[in-house]
Length: 225
Image (cartoon, helix red, strand yellow):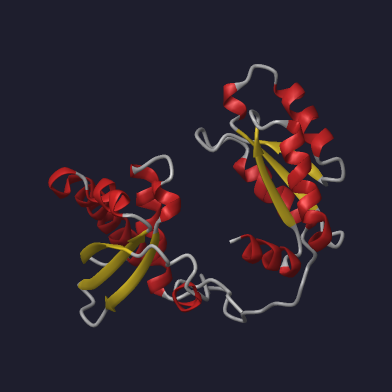
């Protein structure tokens, strides 16, 4: 994972450093130092999250600015309240250099396939419905995406976890938790893909070595050499 982070930093034109008001200043300094060898003077914008949980916003901003003194801007945000997210987006746009137009068609929404977004929607619902280590021990693979019927897409997804205990937590008693994830994911997919119906089947599989298997990581989209 950290190899991927370093590689992404080398390819980026700007870096977004996300921290929060409760993170110790020395922890933020350690991350800044870790990034230094791969940053190559790329501009950094700091997003200081959970600002809704403190009374003194100025003090929190000063601490973040002190931890990352060369940041182009430090923006106080609240992900929960969606506060200042537009300001954060504008701050990033201001520091990213202009480049050549990649797509001639202004209606192009993305260059990623629909399978990618199906997996992301399932992953989002896992983040919404579980806490602690569960979301971060999961990987989602879309193994069937049949869009031949424009009125009903047929999708199958495997959710890989590290341990049997994680599988049990994901599925829940009588399959109730996984059913919640599937229901919400279907609703979101119907809206995102603009299709009347989604047939979604979710399976949970235990694979203790998926994080160390280069072939599996490539299948999941990680840039493994």
